[in-house]
Amino acid sequence: MTVSGLLEHGFREVVLSDGDREIDGCYMGDLLSWVMGRAQADNAWITIMSNLNVVAVASLADTACVILTEGVELPDDVRAAAEMRDVNVLSTDLPSYDAAVLLSTLI
Image 1: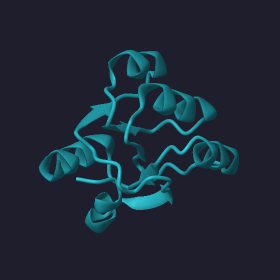
Image 2: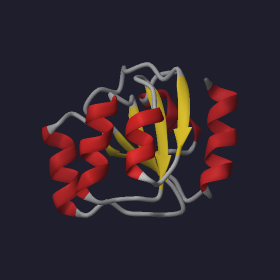
Image 3: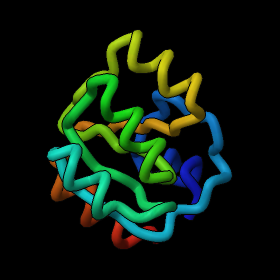
């Protein structure tokens, strides 16, 4: 499944720098230090965090995308940073668990 493929399943585009990026797993967490040490390259990272550090961690961990859940919105400065670092960001109103369950059926 590609990042842009998720758009066909109810996820919304926030920043789509590389929609063709393949997703091969999922990591769900909000503690940034844990995500840095445990998320794998090409994972979709599910979180409710929306600060600048999310972009930095996604870039360091080389995640395929960040999925903001529970209706969390990305502030303009964070959106600009994601665009500058080519970090894909999607959103959904689903709770994190439900987003992860849906994602598991798609990848």
